[in-house]
Length: 343
Ligand SMILES: N[C@@H](CCC(=O)N[C@@H](CS)C(=O)NCC(=O)O)C(=O)O
Image (cartoon, rainbow, N blue to C red; front, side, top):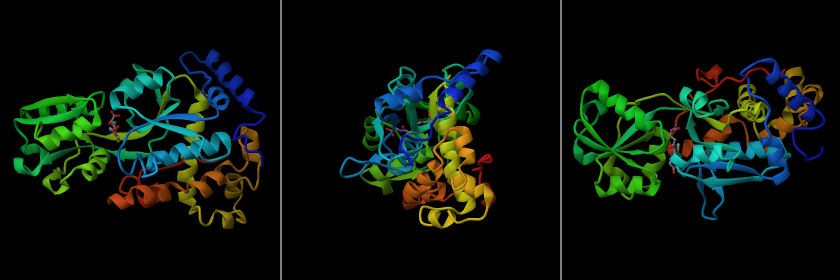
């Protein structure tokens, strides 16, 4: 199998089809040049944050985490091999403009899908990979155990996040007062809580659970039980590149579909002997589907063998932090994760 990635002879046809589609249907985005740029450069440029479990460098400076593993899966999808990804930390405020400016090919940084970002800011989103909600982390000594009790508190919020509007909406609803302190830099954001400059900080609960690990005395803080918002976190790309969007979509779906079928990094080779025609097409034993699309037949096989299915990615990175699957489980287990059919 060549390692040139998922796209073979059909690349031009796909691009052409998307361009034709764009001409025929006003308003539909066309294929862009992201994939070409990535292939020419030889690396995918990914914007990330710095939250343990989701994206953080290990002691050797090598990035680890839930979103990092999706970057690795994309590397396998595009290049047929792991590791052709450059992860760069960027603040929540700067990363969307940086994506728009072409500094990144994709953000895997816990970006929430919102209608404003889709219509007004010019971004497209892959599938939601983590269903989250905004939380509030307070210093215990202020003596509250629910968000509804917060009145007159000073609350840190990171600039450029959905949290800015959510926290204002929340207090408008409760009728209580609060003083927002908007901070861009993540270290300063944490330091504001530790120094007492703010009574609490608000962010995606995924972020707060990770940040708790970074606080010097985590026992002095409590994550309040309320979730203020829906924060479906998804890969974000520049609008207007259908081809790149579909690569992102189906890379994520491959990890979800594999979990639904019980295919793991440990047993994927056993599944190569499966009699199920759908699994044969998925793993490339029957190459007809992949060939018709222009993917390398073993693209999904390689992703699962190397990075694992969604559940493995989750267990490896997030279970150690105490995360339960909850909404982030496969639909057959009562969660929200659902892959469209591979056919
Ligand atoms: N989901 C929110 C917040 C995004 C966000 O701030 N994400 C966290 C990670 S989940 C982050 O980047 N925190 C700062 C950091 O990690 O440096 C949004 O899209 O506006």
